[in-house]
Length: 48
Image 1 (cartoon, rainbow, N blue to C red):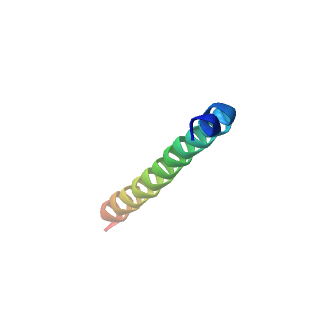
Image 2: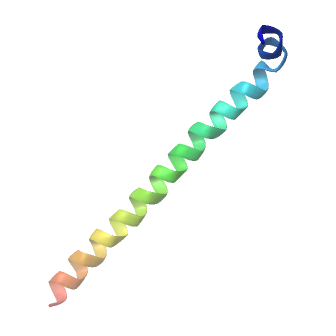
């Protein structure tokens, strides 16, 4: 196992970085969706 980690360390780091970026992207996407819903509710509430 140790030789696998030492021989493929760059790939393991790249996978971890990819997972972190995917998490950030998912968080920002969901945050944007929630903000759009709040803006829509505020806009609809003002017009009524």
